[in-house]
Amino acid sequence: MRMTVISLASISLLTACNGLQLNSSILNGGGGAPSAAAPQDPVLQPAPGVDVTGAEPLAPTSPSAPSFLGSATTVASLGDPSLPGLWMETPLVAAEQQALIRSNRNTQVVVTLKPIPGEASGGSRLSIGAMRALGLPLTELAELQVLPPAG
Image 1 (tube, rainbow, N blue to C red):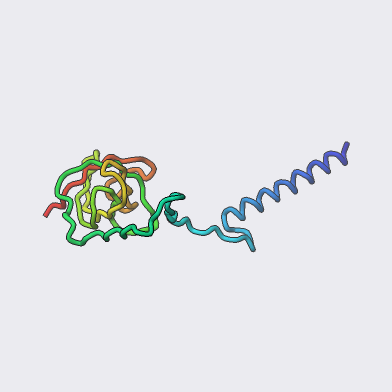
Image 2: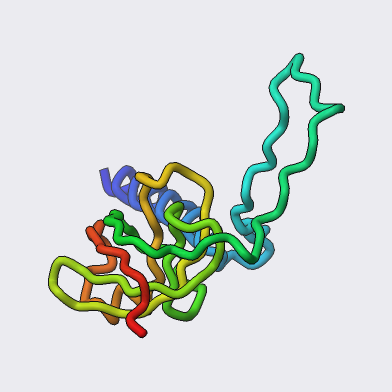
């Protein structure tokens, strides 16, 4: 009986150590464990059977593109927290520009709008600095009003 308990305890300890080793390699704490590569944007490939040899390249966004003059509402989530500054990535604009954003808590901040592909009704991504300046929780979606910068 005593040998059975010791054997089971030994097996449990070895199993627990193996679990710690797996966990530490996931967290990049293992000695020779390969580190995970940073996620990259997917490369879009044409569908099979689609001829793209005569396709014209897309024109770059013109710096003279009209600036955002109206008022719009968007829902924003937290963007890349490693990028500093006050910015919002949004499909509402075609070129980078300044804008005033106002939350439903009646707080506001001037940010740089950065264009992203998508429908104008699509969501936006807000910098961590802008979310903090607006007093918004980092884990929630926020409804924001986008206005021309006051000037």
